[in-house]
Length: 93
Image (tube, rainbow, N blue to C red):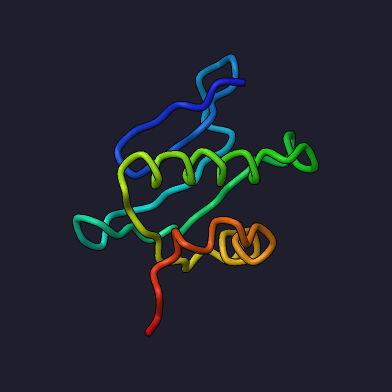
């Protein structure tokens, strides 16, 4: 399984080239993105694909020294469960 990366988007395509999973995180500023959407096709549900997408976002945030604002409900829950990455979330203070 090989995720593809574009600016502010990580996604997965099937053999036919159709997008079957993605996470989007548009820039809010030079150092902050908003993780605003996560999608996984029904054919992949229950395989941990959404979590793998989030891990890819974490890698990119760390590599680019960025923080994330969270408006996607899945991303909010994922970061609550994976507290080791809380330093990547933009503080609301």
